[in-house]
Image 1 (cartoon, one colour):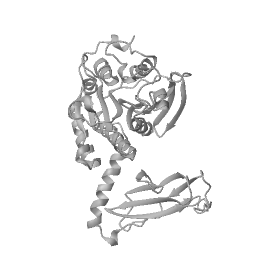
Image 2 (cartoon, rainbow, N blue to C red):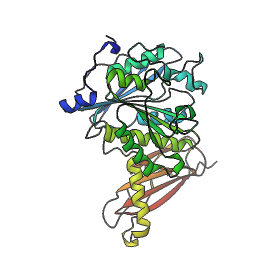
Image 3 (tube, helix red, strand yellow):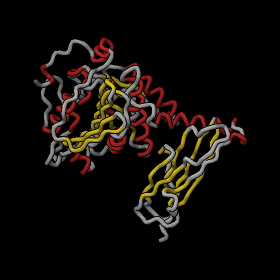
Image 4 (cartoon, one colour):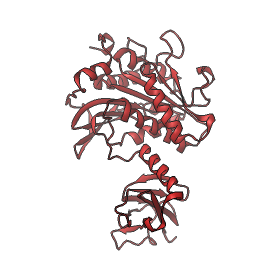
Length: 386
């Protein structure tokens, strides 16, 4: 039975509230390309439109604990790079409960072409009419995935050449659109604006879905909200900002929605260091510049693994392990480890150890450690000798 024939009499969030969580069926995945099981979390992937130019990969992460299901998609439009880049990062996130389903590069042909639409001029995100069959084979394949997993929340990542000013014809960047949960969207935009946006002209706003008979229509999020009763969000960033920043905004929005919007406990694992926790750490360290005592300051230290590996004789393309666990703090343990890789990098990776692939000669890597509100850095230069 196709989902458009189903009767939806109770919003999915109400179902969660009355049942205490969504019980997940352990259905097998047809055509699974690979599966791993790590610490109570299983990860698998499979292809849709396999053997065609539209072939793309679906990633499914399932926790042992029952919980809500989230569906995140990027790359509906091939020239919106931030959306599919962020979705690719999100597909690797760790979750604590429920299921995370991700299609990072949904429109492979348009992405390959670097264009909004495919080679036939089809706009993928206008191919999902409510209560009827999607209009293209790719749209039907994507909707089959949505129908299979029955997500409680759907998040679609896009970007725009203009900034939203209440009229979608003039640009929709820096906005979260929803027709089901505007309060949640408002809380998320407020959080992202306070923690990630430093230009008042680029603050995120909340927009509402258009009605079925008003343009734009036939969007995936429209269908998910109206056919399935899912909480659906379409996030738009402004393409006039650096890609790194746009990706950060997208991942921060998704992270906040999945922590606070899907269920009371959230779907993301607290142990997974994501963009939100990095922002909070940076806030703490900014304050410590004024208040931290030099006697309480930690000492950052980078060593290479294995210990006999030389940082001054690394082959280009070689991967080397850097260890920050020898860093010390006079007040106790290290609260967090952050790494900046490359001459133009930012503190994006976290953890006591990281693997670095050397891309060029004299490749700098910086470790920043934080303990009790104070921080210190250490830097190492990886040299290829050529």
